[in-house]
Amino acid sequence: MKCGVVTFPGSNCNHDMIYALGNVLKQEVIELWHKDSDIQNCDLIVLPGGFSYGDYLRSGAIARFSPIMDSIIQHANNGGMVLGICNGFQILCESGLLPGALLHNNQQKFICKNVFLKPSSKTTPITKQLNEEKSFKIPIAHGEGRYFADDKTLKELTKNDQVIFQYCDENGVVSEEVNPNGSCLNIAGISNANKNVFGMMPHPERAVDLLLNNTDGKLIFESLLN
View 1 (tube, helix red, strand yellow):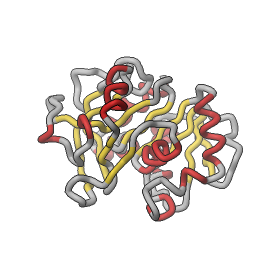
View 2 (view 1 turned 180 degrees about the vertical axis):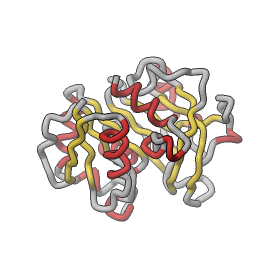
View 3 (view 1 turned 30 degrees about the vertical axis):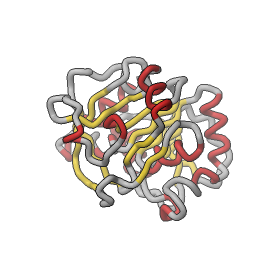
View 4 (view 1 turned 90 degrees about the horizontal axis):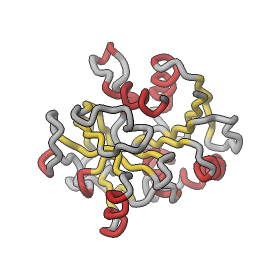
């Protein structure tokens, strides 16, 4: 699969993503610049984590207006796959490709640690091949990761099987006690209604290498790429 990884001013996980997709998963990877308008016929576009434009105004709010976003929105509307990780998830929400918003963590502190995720959807490419009985250990690193949406949107997400990951314990139990940031319904990731745009706060690209003693993130990418 041909994968395009976008770099915005302030992106800091773009090379992690390029390494994960190219070196570990052996995919063709193209580096895309935020001022480009040509996505070079990529099948999958990835918006990586970081602090685009310094998180000024609101996380992702300025990056949403980068020239490449018009092409990415068109790509998504034509059925192409788009994945946003952390700041990329924030950008997708700001652009309207995903519903809801990412707010400051409920304890008003930046969080950087490993968490466990439960695959919550049976119908999206990014979760379809994952074992629903397994919890996946994936790092988080964010200050504005609290997913929020109104009750109507949350009901639609649940009804349409658009919640792709929820925070859980190591045994796969979803509870408020293991919710790291106060996200509604313990949501760690969602998809759009057409199941081709995906956003998640945790960083699977940081869990793909045996050197880190964690390859749970590789399983998530393999599900998406297959």
